[in-house]
Image (cartoon, rainbow, N blue to C red; front, top):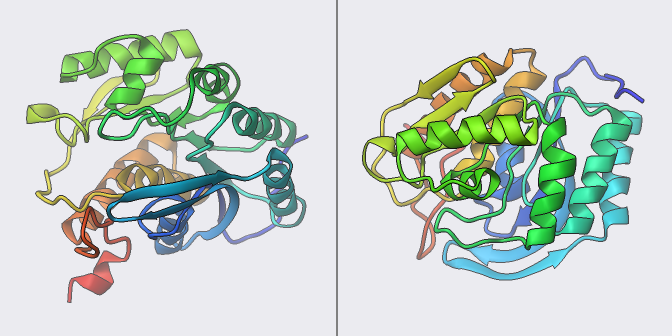
Length: 273
């Protein structure tokens, strides 16, 4: 069954967790969609109690509830692109992967949320296995950070050359169509540099570095921006380049809120005056 496009307005779907602090997850995704003039729909996978200081609690949604959300969107609205974020456990990942295949979800961007930017693993090994085997092969692009790239490739990732090697291993072993390894958590000349590999083209994507500690939600925002551009009809390469520019601008106007790590400024034109 292929997803039917039922709206002339570009529509994107985020399948991710809720961030009560508003900096990441579906809150960041929906703001990113809106900035790109794309109608945002959502399937909530888990609910977190968090703020700029950290996560206090996480409650998973039942897989049946997640399936119902996805199906409700597709039956009435349809989507042109989708992204996944925090899927939390093996049961949720399997349910989402099944829906992607059954509905023919197009232009799928998988942000394989497994490890935080500080290196803390967020899902167990069984969930990682299901992500590798069932969801990643269906993605148009996956966007692992350096720690996630380490898990998916089995390589140590500390340098740009490590990122290049990991991207190629992930592409080969996991049947990922395009791999974008993010260097946001790496210091030195790899900071903020991403590596693209599509099986033929190995590219280094750079933007200006932004000196801010308010970087919460950058990974969610990048993958959502890629999905938004795909929903608007851009090709994948152009979607990634435009998404990186958007994130750089949002970082430039990051929000200094709370007592910890604030979020990026998704509506930066409103903040620049």
